[in-house]
Length: 122
Length: 107
Image 1 (tube, one colour):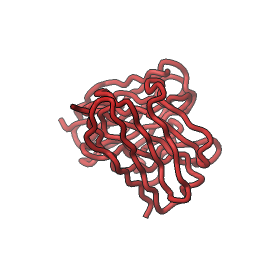
Image 2: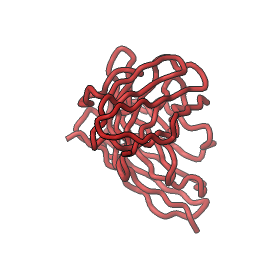
Image 3: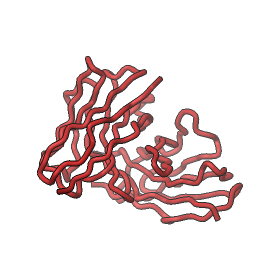
Image 4: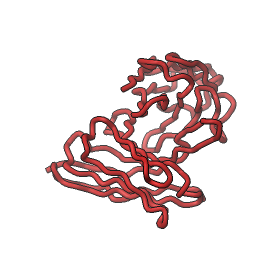
């Protein structure tokens, strides 16, 4: 079964750190670009970060200002998001998603995990 | 950063009726536009990519059109399972950005 499963969310104090994981199965993870997105309660979706298949190209939302780091371990079929200096505005459901290449330059976020909730509060 | 807007915010539709949703980008994204459906408590689901191509398994009642800065998602005959929030996403430039969504609910 083609699946993404996030973990690592939870309650963290302002200024704290957290590492999210996204375990992939059922497809060739090492050739798939992957994204992290988030959705604050009652709000719309926001791109957080992206990484290509071999991990040598990464992208971040402008608002993150170096606080987050995306990485992947293709030997473990796992995507990571290291989050630091967390703020109240980082509180959200965090999703990982596959950036699928349909060919001829066509792409879409076709596979999503169920999300993991990050709560930032003292 | 490209700003995406959607209209209307909410849409009241009876089952079997047609729904037309709009999405605009603050600058041209070509055809690099996707539509997603999201139901409460669930992850988004890809409906349309490249502005008009249905993703795998998406029923033919969903169609997308447009290019440049103006896009439309049409649901030709709403089914009960279609009542949800629909959002557009541009991927013409990083950061990829999403519209705020249109909530389609039953009249």
